[in-house]
Length: 144
Image 1 (spheres, rainbow, N blue to C red):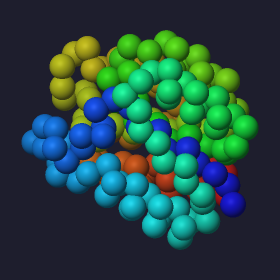
Image 2: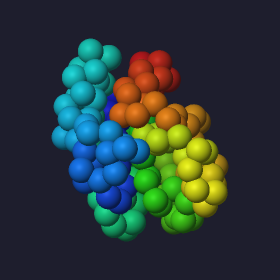
Image 3: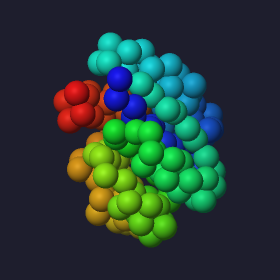
């Protein structure tokens, strides 16, 4: 089965608690459960991770180079700041899909720029946590 790394950046461990008016009440554990259920239907294996540390996310991308066929990433605030994550993603040969729970283009102007988008095959923003499932459905078509 193709393996997909689903990577989550800083503060997403607080999903469901932090700014529910923007991010909703669904927890990251709920997102993981839903991703695993859909992945099983689609014939995908999931490696689901979250870190508040840029270097840890880079290490996971490096790990994905050896064991994954695709990466779905919600880099959170690192979206707008991390050339290092972009550089790591540029070493990954498979498809990369960028996910954002909120519509970043309706928010502060600093959120309108994404380094990750320079590498991503697609960007899903503003569909809430359903964006993860949309990303997995697309990845299944790309790697299936």
